[in-house]
Image 1 (cartoon, rainbow, N blue to C red):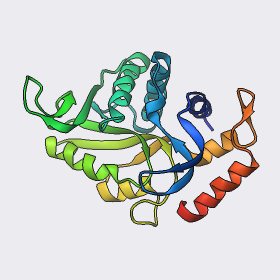
Image 2 (image 1 turned 180 degrees about the vertical axis):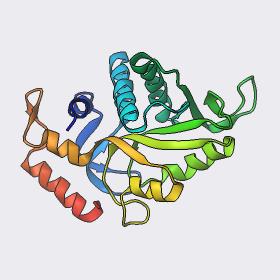
Image 3 (image 1 turned 45 degrees about the vertical axis):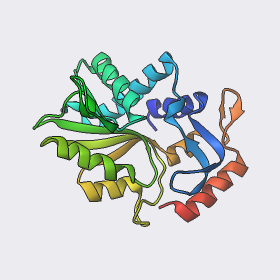
Image 4 (image 1 turned 135 degrees about the vertical axis):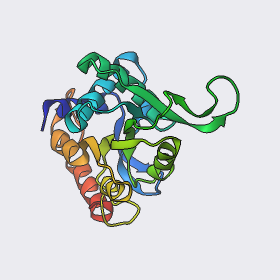
Length: 225
């Protein structure tokens, strides 16, 4: 595993973004783990988050793109800090764009988007916190493609939960590729998380012990691919 992936996993735990216990997901699934990117709240956390996303995007998609699109709401700060990190790490100016939940009908920036305007010919990297079933793409992709004649280069999420998507057979990220025609990747997968944390201490505490590992394994018997 690349060093930055190991560091990112420990960073998620230390930031209390990746938690383990008993959670009910938006999909209705009962899960022994949960990731909430809204828990990145300090300046140093957000700076590091942008750097991890920028490194992963640069490794997978390079820098031949123009816009980072982060869906509202959690995708908004992620796209902003990643654009900043791209400029600092790679000297590349990338614009950010996000959608609005409610269209703004007044002022100079009225419309369905905030940040940069999407233009014909733009190459766009979609950026999200996590994808469980892939349902969020049903709303986001038509908005982006309907705004201008753009090319979506790919999607980057922080964590691949490695679960069945809406079709119930393939991983959500694989379904996104099949449905929309662009690659979907993650900084780390849950397999990476288990490898990094199982019976290994983070700040002196073992995060995934035998009991939790058994619960994760049982979860994947039902929902995993």
